[in-house]
Length: 333
Image (cartoon, rainbow, N blue to C red; front, side, top):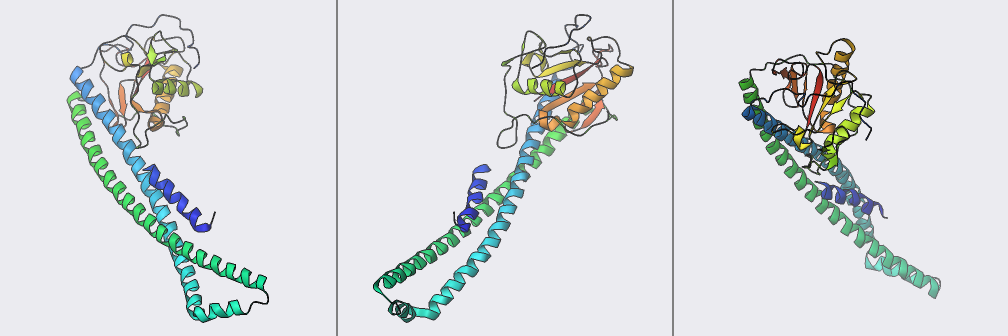
């Protein structure tokens, strides 16, 4: 492949881009480890606003990544345009100096009929090469212009998504103000380590239904929730876990939530000592990998974490389960 055609190839690509068993538990878990149902309207506000925030953030990140890629390709195109312009200029200058008589003289200087044919063929090849070089120069210019237009469109899209992001954050702030939950310190957040869940080309998470057997109950999970569960287990968080359950609210009946017991055997009283440390580390793991796993929110020890607002106080029903002091709750997009 000629150098210029190799240069055009990435521009074309840029244009096209724009289950382990559950451990045994000592006692059967309560039917609802999360306690009493929260305010329906508030729960709906929090869930809808946070879900929209995560999608907008994903789209914005994807747009920024494409912008950076466009800029790199445009920089390469500018360099190659300069090189090609110089090359074509040299050929044109040589042709001008030689002129028709120079070309004719080359032909007459042949020593034999075979030499004459070879020189004629070489001149035709030179003419074709010049034509191809000029064609590639024009093609590269057009590609650069098209890429610049795509870059401008990506920038505008990112601005729109940023505005949407700010609007959604305002919605979440209003919902949190209604709940009366102030900010808290949360837990230590480690470096992200989970394998990312699949996303759409625009950076958002695809909608998923409860279609996969839940390994922790007799119900089902979305593929993304199962992925988060499996990643947590691979990271060493193997205490008793219950995901799907029948309910009239929340993500559990949709297959988009799991409750991870702080104690090895199941949901008990308030977690202390090693059990609380386990819960702290697990909550930190999900938060560190929130973007990779599609985390909607995490609740642990009187606190709720959301991608747009971080940690805030969480008020349950006063029980270890309702206040999430014996288990980490994970909800997925």
